[in-house]
Length: 326
View (cartoon, rainbow, N blue to C red):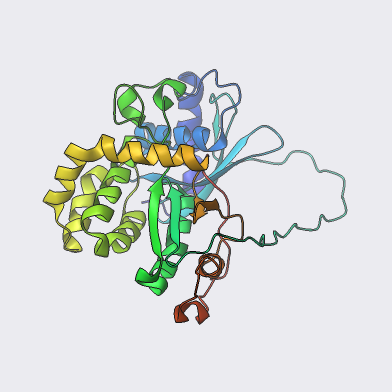
């Protein structure tokens, strides 16, 4: 187990950086303008396959482009988080950056605080709420956690469920074999974080269809105990722990996967969903803040007659979720 940051830094400086240089990168060659999330995911895959080699697993927490052209990403290993960097062409991986020149002192920039957008939604007796996510997008997972408390509060008063962001031709874009990212050879049903993610999307859709009372518990445990690399081997134990009918989910996954995913594709197109998370309330995309209370207020505003539960204030936590996978 990794015990401190300097052990991690030394390990990657000695091994990862050397490997990245002499193997000419880790599979993201010739992408002129790769998205930070894609490049970071490839770096994580490279670390897991070539450095950690099964001893432990690195997972991606967040990623962003820096002004100097590097992609900065945060990864977690053995419960500890680290910042690392990868060059735009995928050739070089840096476990640490060192500032060599001091910039002239500048006046502090006032942090921009987003103000929730006031929106109006069509009012219905039972609002339909569709939260689009990728099952292993960290920002989508945050939104799921936020929405879980709203779904539990409003229970059957509103129709609240998860939907999934599906890409096509993704393996081709990544210069990879179809089964690394896609369910089918035609690459109609693919996901950003790999085959494990699209498989898990299907299982969650099946659970929502056949045993919806266990849905949010299952999603919560999947998010906390697995990642896209190991979920295929671990989901059954979690399902059994929650008394989910594994055989029913497996049968659905085998016989209904493409039909269910095609419905998701059609919804993606209908609403113009571009990334994870995206929230649709009564067929209107939500543009406001991202806390449990923000979500609750938006959904409650879509009732023809607000239920008593809407008077309850939900804890928003210490921070507001931000970011997206796209």
